[in-house]
Image (cartoon, rainbow, N blue to C red; front, top):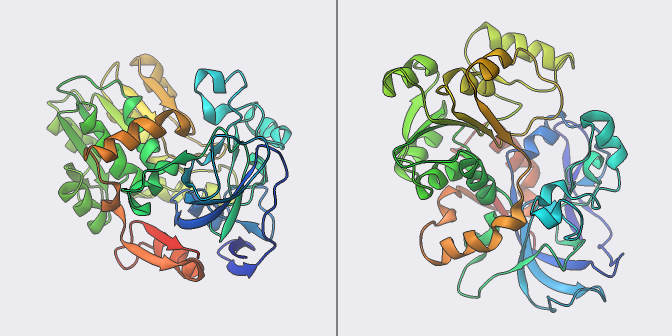
Length: 390
């Protein structure tokens, strides 16, 4: 089969690789009908995530048709159309039983690596380095799905692939980010980053009862999408001081909750950005927590800072004194996708949200290396790329 393989920083190649095989009775083989490039894939592309190996297959947002099943999978049948959650979860451990699926204790065979970096290991993740299991990803024609009796969700025939694909990751991620804000009627929510997760965080905040959402970015087409498609008020951080503007818009109190949908490769004008770039280049910190710092400082007293943006390891100059002295709550985590699959599928079926609004580029799998470059550099008004491998 053909797959998009990693061979180093900014070096992706479409290669012929062996077809996946059933390795465990709870496995399924999926013929992939639609896959996507996620913003967090850029951290792999840019070389910031350790333990990548030459030939690793990327991609953790995918769906397709069941073509083979292990003997232990009884809830699916050959020919079922399914969407696959990016966290791999066993369904039986301490955390899975508490619906904290991204913390599954059994799905990361390389847990010892993660423990050295983070103290404890999260779950295994498709296509996202050997730190989280070394699983082959979904930017390919086929994929092996472990614990297929727990993860994949059968999707109704009346919904298109594009309508349900983002249940694999970014729609639940944006929703969980908003849910963590404990939104009350009348609340103002600020969202840093108008990429795909940020767009879904905006929409989700409104679904959960926010009165106003303020979105922060610098890319014109993303700001326009946030206004016209997601309904946010927007701030271009290259044209206005974000903190001052948020204080003015909230009567000096600050947003009730702030969402950092940017993560470890944030940008900003000024010397602090140069400082972070130098430290990151020298591996003295693994992320640029610019959006996180702003979100903490801007959030109102007693508010919540929700962090769906990916951070890999160590970051610098985080104003923890502000968190402690102003009684802020920080909520974060890889998304417990399984928890949200059916509720969000129902919202799609009911017309409460149409996830396809974020798609700007529809390409072939063979276009993946060039598409990564376009997406990274925000060229051609690129917000979200989907690809058909077969």
